[in-house]
Amino acid sequence: PEYGCSCATGYQGDYCLEQCQPGFYGADCKQECGHCKGECDIYTGHCHEGCNTTYLTRPHCKQPHSYLKSAGKVLSLGVGEIQYEIDFSPNNLVKSNDNTLFYILQYREIANSSWNNFTSDASDGGIDNTYDIFEEGGITTAMRIFDLLNREYQIRTILLDEALETHDPSLTEPFEFELCEGETLKVENKTSTSIGISWVQEIDEDSQETNSEPTVCHTEGYKLEINQIENDKFHKERVITTVRNSYEIKNLSPGQTYNIELKKLIKDNEYVPLSNTNVTTRDEVIDSSDNIMGVTISKTKSVVYVEWFASPIYTTFYVKYKLRRYLPCTEQETTSTLHVATTSNTSYSLELKDLESNALYELFVTGNENQNVNPQNSSFTTTLDTKTWKCNNLTS
Image (cartoon, rainbow, N blue to C red):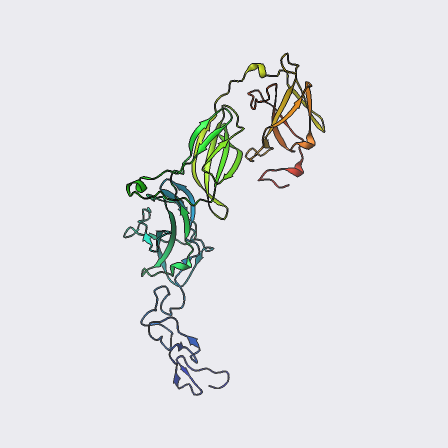
């Protein structure tokens, strides 16, 4: 054709008399056909015999069906079950020109190559009790999968259109998790100041019946979150990470209830809850002869001054103090240990510069070097400095 002109769709050449060669269509035959079975229509590019893979949308067989970037996220692990959610928001959905109506959840043990369908128990129904109704736009509420063995699993989410055609599953990243034997908190022992816990791996019934070896757990680590419960409120006591399956929590208060939550590292510093329990430490009966009477606390701009009465028994005194929490954030975690100062006087000065600002401390004086708790703790706060708040919900 002349400059600035083009041939009608389906034709090419100087006089627009030549039909498009196989694999091309449109005006001047400049557009390539999609992945068709056979040839595409030289006028429209439609693949009349369909696509050479069901993973592409008809009629042009160029675009993949809609798919999710990520299959989902594990929220928590339990005995033989998980809780998870699926993100159907635009940030996670690659939308095509198809009409997505359903989704299906598939799983496999990592050691296997074949995938299996989960049977749907969703309240919104589905087809053949397998397909769930697809609703674009948000994140699902927490959903559960039951009756799982202690294995490593992969789970993927597949979207389907009205013809039950779908995308290439490899486009969606599956989520992985591992269920291990006995990952439930068990209290082994407790005293007035410590709690010993374990989450021992045990041989499950399936392994015993088949005379096979118990599943090896590939866990990279665990996290323990310990919260002291006061007036039905949680106050973070400390957070502990470990690769072991047992731990002794020390330096606790007697007669106090603690919530202990076990979390499991699954990937990239991401932990999911496994188990939690409430444990109350024993009440400690303290020998009254150890008590030092008349403890008073006063403060100046630079020191916290502690005084007490002389003892008819002891000539050496131990001032023991511990950071309880930062102010005013009662939910801020602390990992403070018990500090000990020794003196033969009946007074002692703590330098404020050596203490944390904006903090609540507990203190007691004893003549017993080995005494670590006292029901009659005294408390004091350090200098308030609005520039050094250590609360997660405040800025410095």
